[in-house]
Each structure stands twice: as C-alpha cells, then as structure tokens.
Image 1 (cartoon, rainbow, N blue to C red):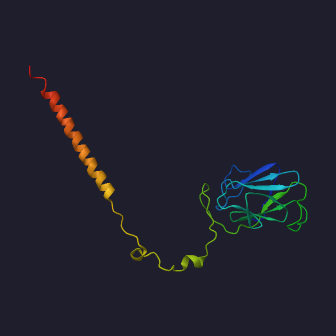
Image 2 (cartoon, helix red, strand yellow):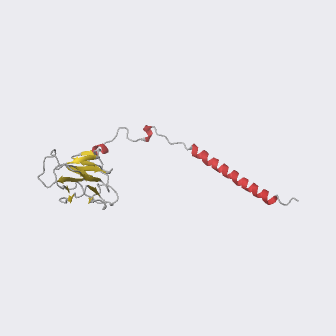
Image 3 (tube, rainbow, N blue to C red):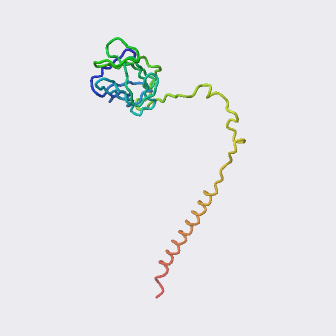
Length: 185
C-alpha cells in the first residue's frame, strides 16, 4: 500500500476494511468501519468508530482528535499521514488549507484474513511475561480447588422421575376408571 493516496474531497470520509467505505484499506488489523475523517473549515478531524484495534495519532489513542500535516495516523497496523501538498511542516505546525490527501505509509505487518473479521492486535504483554513460570503455577492439588458436589442435580433428577411415575399412575387410574365405570346398571 506504500505510495497510495486518497484525496479527501467530501466533508466526511469513512475509512475501513470493507468496500462500502470511501477509503478502503484491505488489511486484517483494520476494522470493517474503522474511523472517519471530517473536513472542517480549518482542521482535519479524525473520529474512531469503535474500532477493534483503536485509532492513534502520533502513538496516542484517540476517540476524536485533530490531525495535522506531518502527524502519523495509525489504524490497526497501518500508518497513514496527512499531506496538504506543501512541504511537510513539523508535527506541531498548524494545518494548512486546501484538500489534503491521506497517504498510507508501509503497513507494519501484512497478512490475509477473511474480509469480515478484524485481526486483533495484542498490546501490553511481552513475550517474557508469557514464557515465565508463575510461582505456584496452576497445580490443583495445592490451589484449594475441589470437585464440586452434584447433589442438586441428583435430587432434581430423582424428583422428576417420581413426579413422572405419579403422572403415569394417575393416567392409568383415570383410564381404568373411565373404561370400567360404565357397566354397573
């Protein structure tokens, strides 16, 4: 995707993995409807659409924020930048005029997945955390766990059988009463 651009011509542009977005990014870490770009008079506003992996500007997670030329917009594992056609100012410079374009940088990872399912990007756990042995481990003999007694289910089953037998006995009794009760006169 490196080098691709998308000119922002309308007030609101949706970005996501599926085809009904104005700007489609077919990358598994991008949600089907990831975010929207809103062009206001002086600013480009990015609004996250409850994406799975979040929307980030310069590494900070946002729900809605102004994106300025030179800043990096990250959707899942895809990085984009805003370009207003002029020389790139420092990230703290104000947004310039004109119709900016969102240009994706190289994705940080590639992969193919079903188009209707977002690949979740894991954050906050290091490989060392996963491979370290935890003190005590998960030994059921020392952890205090015991097998649960199933007395309630047993009582319920016995009660159901007894009630069923009573119903069958009543049906037989009523059937015999109706069948044998008409011949006495």
